[in-house]
Length: 342
Ligand SMILES: Nc1ncnc2c1ncn2[C@@H]1O[C@H](COP(=O)(O)OP(=O)(O)O)[C@@H](O)[C@H]1O
Ligand SMILES: [Mg+2]
Image 1 (cartoon, rainbow, N blue to C red):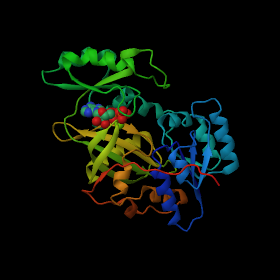
Image 2: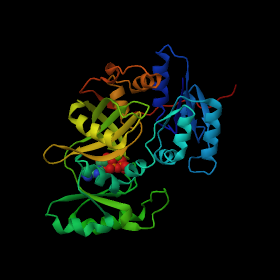
Image 3: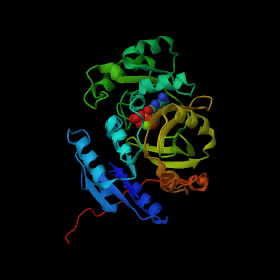
Image 4: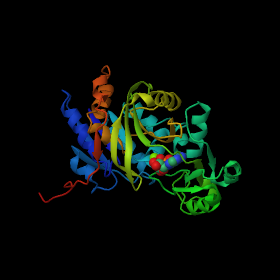
């Protein structure tokens, strides 16, 4: 079994945990870190490190195709949103035709999760709870109906890692949109030309925030294997620093619906926040292994083992996705040797 984890970068724990999970099976195999930067910590932890051209370079598709043809990997997971975007065109289909499961959404679905405006519309159409969302260029629609004391979030429409985030009251919205727009990127990852329309405005949700993984089979059948959830207790620079595991049941319906909408494979990472009535609302979807899963891993879940089981074609084992509720974990820094003299 050859498992490729691409662009793991500092999320190198995934490489480690896939190796451990593979080691516990009777399968022979290897976990391969594919990286553009060969001094990324994941390369030091993998069975093998493979350099790849940058995913936004013209050489990337052919290099990946060539490598897959020669190596025939079984499972390909990327941790980078922009790389997923590039794979979700024809490239993932080509890799699948070579027998590799690629955890990427279909080409018509991937643009929905990249665009926070389209995503909010798609969620609302399916009746999945999500805050009212307008483009920054339509901010007057929200201002006209705002009551004093209402708070609003401005963020980048194609953002990640909390880029462009501002939380303000209605009268400050136009300025906040203008400021946020100055650093906004477009769908192509380049500075956005359309200013305010490259931001979105939402009502600010007052309740606690949750990170939730939906775990699905790796063949794109959309079979939900389990749901893993934690409350985010402390955030720093767009990453969760401290979180406490919570019961998954309150999120099952939303994750099931999102699964039916996106037909994901392997894992999706969903951010939700409670409204004033304590009802969780979906604010963000990343169709990949996310930054918050480690908090559930530390509480006993084994997502890598569940995905390996699925890749081998074995019946799902629900035990692998069970974890203790109420476990608080904190992020730390770690150091890994990535090169040394022979
Ligand atoms: N509607 C909202 N109400 C309250 N907080 C929000 C809202 N939208 C986003 N946030 C905060 O901003 C952070 C980043 O927003 P998010 O939509 O997850 O975008 P991304 O992670 O892609 O940058 C969230 O983790 C949350 O803390
Ligand atoms: Mg997010």
